[in-house]
Length: 140
Image (cartoon, rainbow, N blue to C red; front, side):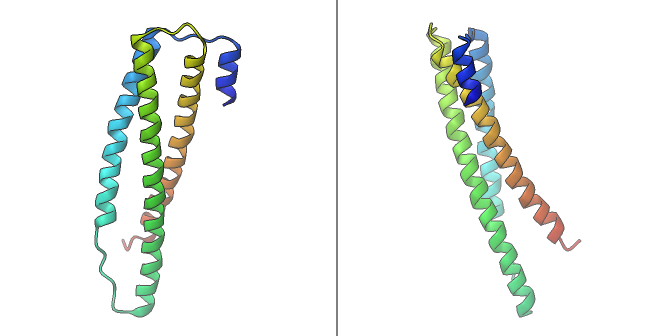
């Protein structure tokens, strides 16, 4: 938010090449994130066989509940990231097609890039937690 305010205050302008790069950037990330969601769905649909020992089964049930919670949170973050990318893509397309003379659109783009980066960091953090749990709890 601070970067967006500063870019507005200093009258930052973006040329059509910057919007063209933004279109490419957000378009690629939309496709990439959708692929990640499909892969996560297949992980979520995987069936786990419960062991016959009640204590081991209870421990495994807790692990599966934690995994499910992380997958749900990660899916929510990814869905939100797709929404942010779509908004940024549409705004970039509009700015590429029709040049706006004010500083509002570049400031909004700065905000969207910063917001995208912070949300992506949340996704990476949750994915790291999920994979760390998988590697730690792996029988091998």
